[in-house]
Image (tube, rainbow, N blue to C red):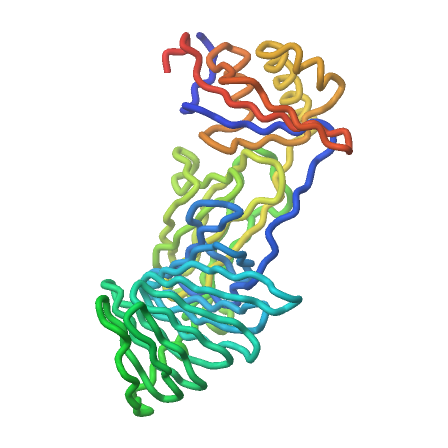
Length: 394
């Protein structure tokens, strides 16, 4: 069909909210990232998919984290327990509140190394492929090799170290090792010079900063420029910094390093004399984040307020009305008189504007019956599953 918009969508779940915007409560946080250096990624239960972590990011039960080469992370839990995470480490946070600021925490580490300092009264366990370390009011270091072999070094207090073949109690300034098919080794004394000290050498060399070249809110779909600067530890522009940095957009933000010829949610940009410029654009209304990270650097984060002009909102409302009238007239009658307040693509790609256009042109069709959820405040949420029509040839 001439003039039709072509987008790559196989199946799409689209959520439409008519009337007032509906807000949902989120899972309560149990910890916060209080230091991030280099390539630290997080897979959040509230927003699945690996993405760059940022300083001050909150963690909830079930979140997964990993650190890349020359990277470091530090996590402060609600009960003041602290985990410092070395490079090339992968783990899952499982922590739940018991009373007020008390937690029951279970860290599952697949590989890597961490320094753990717990507070008196906290209930803290760390599981590895070959062992479980149960601690209370203590500090220790745990290193897990690729084959699951686990090395425990206790710096203060005591740790119960166990697996299905045995259990030992490692006390201050002792170490033990657990391997597959063997119980934990008997604790041996550790000389002061053998105590792990990597956690004391984690200061970032550079700090990455981002800002919009022209401050203020941005219109959906309109490209805008972002400047990235690398500063040294004194806050001065690092003129000698010529490294690649990774930039990631969230919430429908796409980025371009070639002047807008190609777009992606993740790009790599080489800085020149500590600075660089790229383009960004957004497809969703609201506050969206862009994060930049690099080796031995603290990441930078820019929050952009994306908006639609009144003209654009009227246009998309008109498209939504036409699309619903075509695919489900009864549903269109049900929400007659209400205006579209928000839309989200939960599976698939593209944006709501494109989907409406495809539905109007007959290139997409409903798959099943739309789900309609009415709220006491008068808003209506419509959940639709759509797919390419047989006539579209996709």
